[in-house]
Amino acid sequence: MPEQSAEFPRRIVCLTDETVETLYLLGEQDRIVGVTGYATRPPEVRTKPRVSAFSSAKFDAILGLKPDLVLAFSDVQAEITRELVSLGVTVLNFNQRTIAGIIDMICALARLVGKPSEGEALVESFTRGLDEIAEAARQFPRRPRVYFEEWNDPLISGIGWVEELIEIAGGAPIFPELRRCGKAKDRVVNPAEVLARDPEVILASWCGRKVNKEKIAARPGWSSIRAIREGQVYEIKSAIILQPGPAALTDGVRRIHSILGRVVGRGV
Image 1 (tube, rainbow, N blue to C red):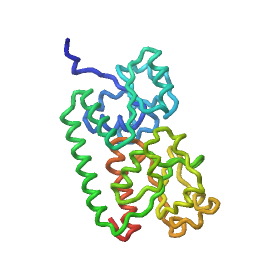
Image 2: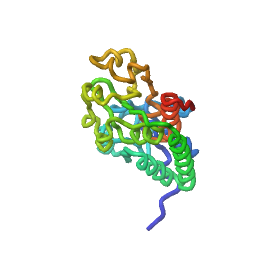
Image 3: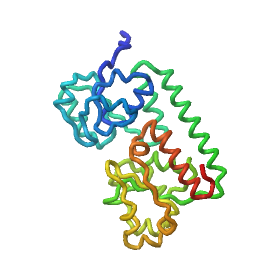
Image 4: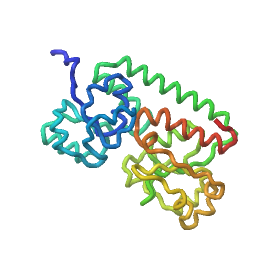
């Protein structure tokens, strides 16, 4: 069997941010010819052509870039994937939902562009950082109850990798049963149940929308939630937590750890 050319893929379109950041970290950014409109990391990516949102894409623009490969993510981009395949484009749709899945994605992408050892080094660095945060969190006097809100209408919570990162950072997610539910519609929560579970910390990250902490506090009955009473409501930028890639494993988890450290009196 002939060996795969080390040059393939030469022209990559990334429809989500995490594959963009991974390719930059691998030093393979010159392969990227088009990106999602949400791509922000690193800042240099702003010079790349924007060809998609998250659930929609400019198919003519993508075809015009003559990609060897398009990288997509999850069931949300399933229709985009289907349309591109019907147009004759090669698509790889990742579906990582856990920290282990993120690591697998990074390693797979590194192998794909001929940088397996660099991918392993990245993963080792991320794993070491997570271990250091977990060790610091073990010094917390307690693990505060945390409600993470990834969308506000309806309320959606429990996304897998975020719940794991909250635990590593020193918190106790209040909806642990939801983390195995891949689709957002299966992670819709009742506001009354949030109230009943009385989180000590509320972390919110509304994809593509600025969090309104005043509106969160004004929800019926929520004034009695401990996090609301004590002013422990925080926004986490979606770019560092809702993209299942390097940003979440670094800046995202550090941000959560810093917040929780202040809550329990161990400022970091």
